Amino acid sequence: MELQAKKIYLDYNATTPLAPEVILCLSEALTKAWANPSSSSEIGQSAKELINQARKKVATMLNAKPSEITFVSGGTEANNMVLHTALKYFNSGSGKLGQGASLKPHILTTNVEHDAILLPLRHYETEKLADVDFVPVSMSSGQVLVEEIEKLIKPNTCLVTVMLANNETGVIMPVAEISRKIRELNEIRQKEGLCRILIHTDAAQAIGKISVDVEELGVDYLTIVGHKFYGPRIGALFVKEMAEDSTPLYPMFFGGGQERGLRPGTENTPMIHGLGCAAELVSQNLQKYQEAMKKTRDLLEKSLIVEFGENIIVNCDTALRLPNTSSVSFRETTMTGGEILSRCPHLMASTGAACHGTGKPSVILMASGVSCEDARSAVRLSVGRDTAPAEIEQIVQMLKLALKRD
Image 1 (cartoon, rainbow, N blue to C red):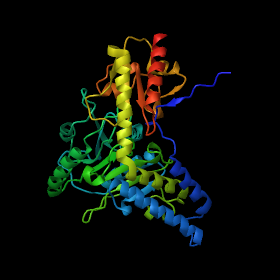
Image 2: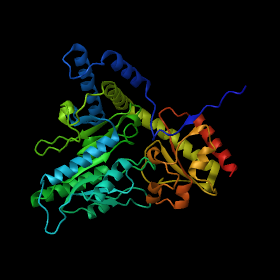
Image 3: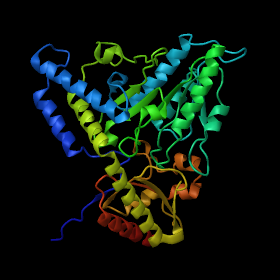
Image 4: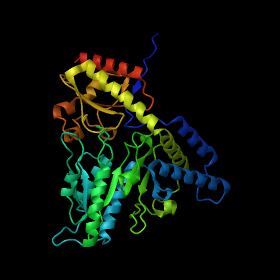
């Protein structure tokens, strides 16, 4: 009887497996620190200490202070919390408006954000809670341009939120440059009595793949998602502390005093401890991870181009991209990306964001300058820390066989 062929996973942008070290941390917390962290008992205090350690480890990974880290359920909650805060901050009377300006808060984002940003903002528009501009990214690079954001800033602008790296194309956005420009504008706005513009970046796809330093980025808020860097499905939110003008954060829930009253509810100690462990691994090994993933991703793209020649394109390859991400489109085929993958039963990959697969051409790719036809046949291949060169050759052959049968 033939042995079943090994399946190859190339969907690390969707989620990652738990690192072995993280599994040990989870087990430790589940068996030795299971008590309520708010309890004064010895085991309760052990749980509290694990949470404190995790906060320090996440902060170290980002070059932040432990007091700037708030644990939440995941990226969606963190993003919604920032958007909720922006509305409350503006409506609290944070600054005067120019004559004739809208009384509603104004928020700027890009047209290629994750749904955890796009959908809440569309809801705000529908409910007439805020005015929102979705800034188009460059059709040649997939990056948003700083000047395009600056053009759309209004007296009632209260938040700019731009992802650090796109989950489908891997394109890295110029967040540090955007922050610098916004801070320059904020100095002028302060003199005019206008609302300070808050700055947020969703760093879900970037952490564990490139350096993420909150001081270099200059942001007020940054979203952290554990399961994107070999940690558990829990998240955190970085909120910048400023000596004179502290960054606001308004809770979405009310209950106990956990997380300084900002995120009430008994803490999920095992998941938080696991997140801290995953963050520590990133702090210790980022360069190694980055180099290994880039080497493998580059080998993948080179091998695909050698095999398919002009019948394949690497989307957004002129832009600075994550070291592990490759969005490729196949030409001279009538198949969609999903149909191509369905003919590769031993390849686990995707056509785009795992959260909203529709079978239609990716709007993110088309917004980034990829034609509808090319977006239709696109496949996202995202390698991991341990993806082996031998697996790359197998993947190329799988795709070759799949496309031969068209």
